[in-house]
Image 1: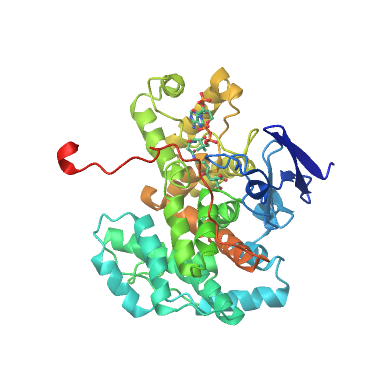
Image 2: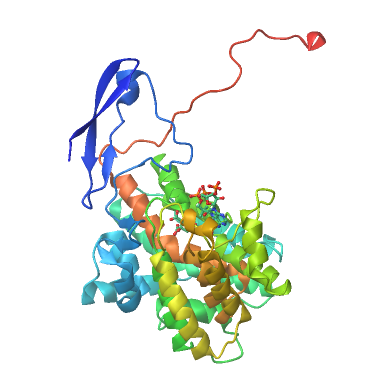
Length: 425
Ligand code: SDX
């Protein structure tokens, strides 16, 4: 592979260094371009721009490959626990027996939130969206655990965040249904505790169903990281300014909320409901999405990187069937989703544009089957993505020569003009 690229601009040739990643990806390094040529590049949605070098997650969009630290997503979904994947993403290796036990104990011992934080929940309107609550509460953790630059303190804040986020998420659900908060129990595993805090009530014993726990484990693992997506890039940009962990992750939660990103899992269910109420007229909605006069999109379809299939969607489609059967749930939306996929994937418009179901297309069906309400779906995505955001925040923070992220622009506004007194406007 050539070690440089040649740019010819106004007849002047400039050699630009080329970097090649461990999976053969080629990047033209333009970090000195403006100094050498006076020009910048323009790539408004960064579709062709690498913001960093990263050793955390590899995606091959053409081949439908997704690996965390070199481990294939199908292997991790099949064999790993979510805390093991958290450890892998954040510390770079799967934990040994001893590390696994210590990690689990640390997560258990930091799952409570300061009692004063409960008062914040009283201020939220009952209809507050749990993503707004989660973002606010994660930022508020910085008031209770002030930033400290020592490695030990940063690591302790990582454990605190991983453990408390699920408690805050469960509290936001209890708040929305007016039930008392349930406290975590240290002898329960990470996800068992979350399910317990979500669905148990003080007066009754609660048994976590294994099929729910294992389905949730798979969902969390599948969402744990996805290289430089919108919310992870947000976390890296905010962290590049030196903002603390809680502030940076809170920004990531807000970025994930959008319906084109993590909010899509909620939008998919709302779309399937509309199609169901409209007599499951799939072709009508496929045609709507193709019409230039409508801004209707098939939510849960398409991806910036995957131009073949999203491996996560394949795994979820497979487990949706099994989990709903195990739970004895007969959800008409699953049938509608599968038929819609069939109709869309046979349509030229989708084939031409390489539009396939993404991770959000089936995840909502599974969350519904577990009894999780629709407006908590993106919170579930955020809980899954937490270790990925943390790993990228750390990688950005530890990058040698790491600089504040500050892109350039091409100005297209008014050129210089004289002041206009009020009476002359
Ligand atoms: C996630 O980046 C990540 O890694 C994200 C994520 C992660 O794990 O972090 O994978 C999670 O966000 C998954 C995506 C969830 N969003 C949705 O399901 C919303 C619906 N999808 C689209 O909005 C869209 O596909 C995006 C946002 C996912 C990708 O947008 P791009 O890359 O900017 O693609 P595009 O909008 O330029 O689309 C290319 C063409 C366009 O048609 P033309 O203008 O060429 O005629 O495909 C069309 C689009 O109109 N198109 C769709 C479509 N998605 C793209 N048409 C109908 N329905 C869709 N869903």
